[in-house]
Image (tube, rainbow, N blue to C red; front, side, top):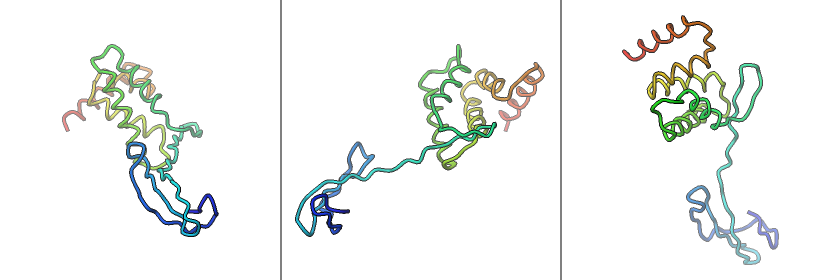
Length: 152
């Protein structure tokens, strides 16, 4: 680290501590050339999570979009706002574990997987939009799939 006073790059760390509730490290340093003391902060640089859309476009991941879609599917159902928020956080965590780029289809499937355990009606509502149902037979097929998954 270069000294801000004399610009020499020979400094010594005197003290290190957590800062900003554990999201940074605060370091007290001393310049070995001029003796000037100064503070530096080390923070994790987060790379933005990008979503590849089916049409070929890319956009940053937006947890609010996931929460809005799940909220619409859960309207009138016994699912709390806290459960929906937790689901949104779980989806974002799942997406980050996949790397810096994830497809919208992977996000949709992850939402369906979690909704299935949360509320079956919300699951079917979300699936009807996500999978673009256009006939009653689509609902029937999804119900059969849902029952198979419950048995296993």
